Image 1 (cartoon, rainbow, N blue to C red):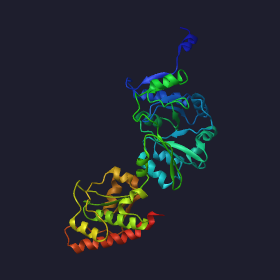
Image 2: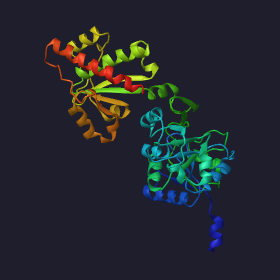
Image 3: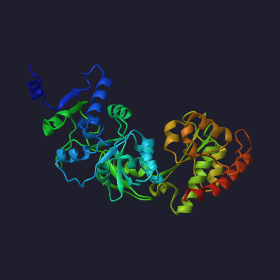
Image 4: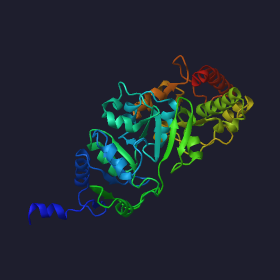
Length: 383
């Protein structure tokens, strides 16, 4: 068959069903080649199907707008590999923005953050792409929670321009056949991974220095977001029945007093206080002496249940205060990437002595020491 006839018989988009492929790496490579060549592809994400273009190709942004039949002035988001890469685009993001990154990514959240071009990865984007991803001084970033997108970004030398795979104003596509019906031969490739997980788009949140607002409702609801933006303080000892529960109870009492709210209202004011033990078993109550001493000082740990320290607890914490240098060193050895959030409770590098097995006066002394340290530490949390 003549080459011209072969070309005329080629029909795009090609649809690749991931459930039927024998070689996922081959599909990833094929998709990366399409994108690097300036073509647009449709990809599955955990939310809805998206149209993707390679962000280092200056024609991709305009092609996406043409395909979706929408104004060039409407910004596009960037899908990046990881939190670390996101911070290379927006290194000056606020602590509030970093909390949402840690607690929601990879996941169905698009963050709209202040963009600083000079000296960041934004400066490496083509000028026409910069104009399409930056609006009003902000840029939208996302780390998808989908294995195919993760593998694809690992292969590409830059981020993806990503937008929902639907004509502007039409319903979002949650299955590959909906994408094919909308775009017919306009895409080079559609990667089919069946129905999407969340069946709704990502939630879009704009974050400034100390404020946030939902720009688009989606897979993460407002109640969950409010919990995720809280400042989380975690106290760590060994068994999570004496020192760290005392610190948790007294911190709750002192912080509520400082803010001017009831202790059970701290969460609604953006604070979460917890404790754990590096060698704790699950389900033990705080020691009776610890409960009594905290109660005597105006706190309440009567309902405390011990729990072992794990990566999720540590990862979600903004401040991790340990009772001893040994506790701190053990956590650093396990998760060195958390170094900037792990602190000894004692400002002068001292240890809080374990009162377990001692007299009641030992518990009183322990609580005295912890309360003194907390009074020193708490003002720094508001800086």
